[in-house]
Length: 269
Image (cartoon, rainbow, N blue to C red; front, side, top):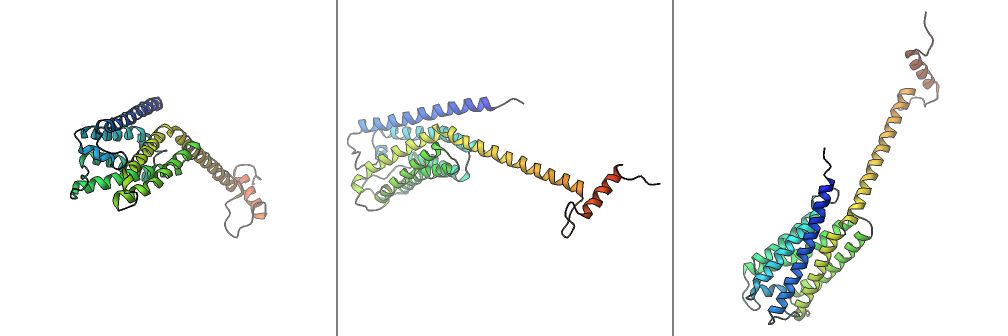
């Protein structure tokens, strides 16, 4: 059977490069929006407000490119049995799906009546921003080493930064005038977290390999003990509760009986 590990290694590297390139392209497109649409304020207006401008297609392209890059970067954490965490997989799926929904359902303009599309956009953005750091924490909890600690700390910082954003985005808050600035800080932190999950995943998998090796060694050791127990029982007879202990009279009789059976005892007649 052909070893598939080299092919998987090449696929991982290509996926990582595509994911990094997609994330970089998304950042460039978002920066281009800030240059082309000067009427919006990076401090007060959200990133989604750029989708309502004449250059809104750039926003949609940037978000979809980021969603595709997320699939490439997070893929090895989803389809590898030793690395996948079901709850984290669900979180990563919510992150990617939420990004796609942002382009399908646009945000309501400021001061306009609330629409169903605007509500879907609002909650999709919150769920997406919440899902990625939660998935990262669930993944890092199953791993050890410096890579896992960096991912866990970055994810925790993103979750803490989400508190003022959500309070200003979904309800009235003194931080409402700074909503755009807070959102941009959260978005940059989550993109950095995405890049960490994609580039440190080899370190995260290494512990899983060690854990699998330890489990295999434990299984072999347990099997060896069971086999030794079986040999001891064959040599000294099977012992039940209340029987004499090995080395006692019953044990001696049992050994003589076995010896006689195999030709090592006294011959009759």
